[in-house]
Image: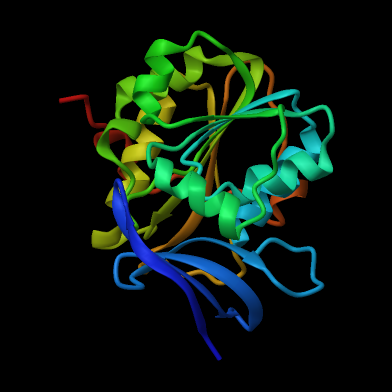
Length: 254
């Protein structure tokens, strides 16, 4: 059974908020377009696990490492920041979400807290990085237009900016929807190539239990320089090797 709670336009897109079954769970989901892609969601059952596998992987990484300062680029309706603020009382989060209409939906439908530890910036990620000098223990990139990462967030220059905004020993993480081989692997190869130019160590983890070499799926990319933190225990899997030919796929700013 589905219940449409809201449908309309924000400054940057068309969305629906729907109470529905998602992956067999009672959930509240934000869909973009004409229900083309699930952008954010929260469970409405008694299971504390986050609704999307990649968000659960990130929750496990962050709660294990316990950073004090975190940047999230691509806030959506802020379901991951909300969960992390509840779990980690010392954590402060800057969240960048260019669509101010999603912030209003987050307050209305997705339990966004009124918390001084969460600062929301309605701008794009690269503009934020140019205009703010702050450095972070952990940066998470989760910015999508439907299912596409904006070009300006996956270039060589973007990853250099991420590196510059990390504290010594900090960790970059990124949600990547891509295939691993074949025609659907372009995005994964682009972000791996750009990350390797700025970071000493780049690893890939499958976000969920299913795996296909060819079909698009969620990967968690992690990148570190200097000290190396093994993350296998927090991602429930061994790292995937970087895809073949990735180092030929780096892209530059226009």
